[in-house]
Length: 378
Image (tube, rainbow, N blue to C red):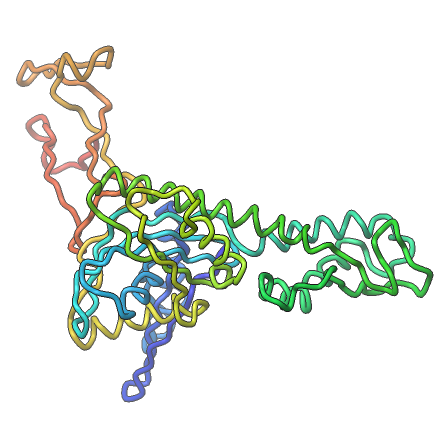
């Protein structure tokens, strides 16, 4: 699970701190967000009057604010791909402001997060190392799983981040095997001189699998955008996040979308692929930019935001013989009209923009005389 990002905005004169938390984009269930909000209220807001904590943008939205604040032009359509350790978030935005103006962005589709990230490469390598260490577990001072986790930290993490550069052009990835008893080599486990040899092609296979999943996610958004906005062209694909900054992932995406032989989406023919400045800090920077802009200029970055899910209210609707064929109905004894029961009146549609002021809609409830002051229940 992705860890929420915390921003601390200090006001020395008041001796107070305001904390803003960006929740993971994969938290699509509003109950999870509200439970986090309740915990913050109990742990911080109620116990420390001088400090306040709020849930602000999602991680993808914060990353988008930072990307939109870089030097792009008004009306540019930007595809943000924020790939981290556990999740990859994709967001499509149109920049509504010119250079020098407060950043204003319009979401062209709902933000989507998928469990794609570098941690899954760690898990795959851990599984491979475990299988090999099982063959020599009698010579290990640690359980194979624990030894494997030690081997996938430290040096492996540094080499993983550098994968795709000249530093990984050696024949093998070699990792020290912890707590291995001095003994001859173990060819059955690819262990020589106390080190396990792992072919870089195996590491490449892990990167290829995750990079292809990112491409599938991007392809889906490009197709949706072409259907929804057929005349709009994606100007830039911005990569951010730890995994998004991987040299190999960037090269993979360049080959996928920029090579002459690559399949071209109609709305991405001239799309440039760029890496965000300080890609691992884009969420924090985005939160800071959004907050400062609200305080100093009174400008809301997102005039509207697209919902990742749909929300509706269960109600009865006037019976329509074309729409409600086979649906259960009831006859209202008051007005003698026929209603289809248990219908959904959709207030929020997935992908549709919602103004920052929210949405409201009036509903009618018929009550018998004398029940006006009692509790109302559908």
